[in-house]
Image 1 (cartoon, rainbow, N blue to C red):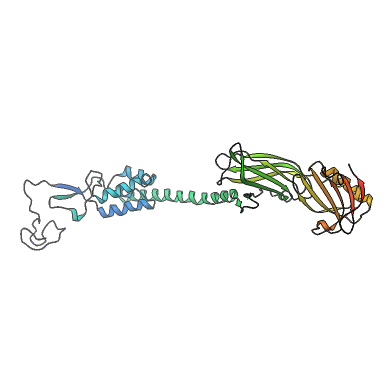
Image 2 (spheres, rainbow, N blue to C red):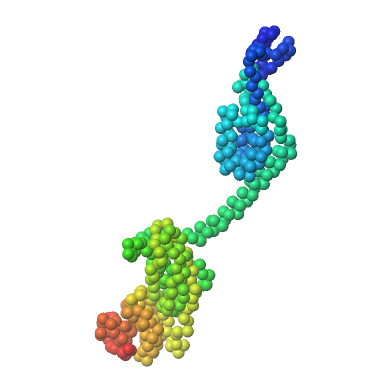
Length: 372
């Protein structure tokens, strides 16, 4: 740019010629003068960008709009929407100071444009208060988020279930038992999410299995999380060793349903006759039939009969079919290790309620006793 008076080259930002002292603009007497804010547009843009990092509103305090500036601080720039709006306004040079004058870049200035200083100029006190408030709000939110995260992780861990692969055509979910009682940990709770459909709605099954050596009486509480499913209490009464009871869950389920359980109750540990010397070393079966392997050292007819009577008294009313196999093997005996057997088989009249002795070939050699 050149001075209109002396013709020497001057900078684009100059208003007066440094050589002759005259104005570098030749204004028509009829040309209108426009005023813009004297606040630096670049500084306002940088302050606006701080709003995306949690410190919003400083750009409005910078141009003297204090009330809106502090509202932005406490609302994160109206949740970043206001901050984005101000940034767009600054880009198009429409963002105004407290007196309503827009912020222009030096490149947009024309010869009839003049800078005008706002009536309200923020002091160092305004900036200090604004920064302290912004940092306090930002720190408070960071503290809340950091303190909430461990609780969320713990809750997710407690409610997380381990979904196993399908076994025997069934989809099963192993559920962690919340109880810390060592004996109660011998009660296994399994949620079955297989396609159980009742009245057109998908249900779930609660399987409760007793791995202890004693019958169990108690309550199982299933906590369920998911749309359409409800918590439920299930009465587990007289659950025999090795026995599994199945309950239909309350409500409907889908793949997103999550479960957690707790259990309360006690074992019936006073069942065994102290005068009889025997030990149950293995069991298998379910709700309809149970087989017990009993280790004994005394194979006299009297001792086997007394043990059979006690086993009959304890377990015959719990299942449809019952087998008590006497063996000399303590560790994982098989059917071939059976020396004698007492059985309840309503469909087999020859063995029903009979205590029999096996020969070496595994065939029935003789009937020791009939125990009704």
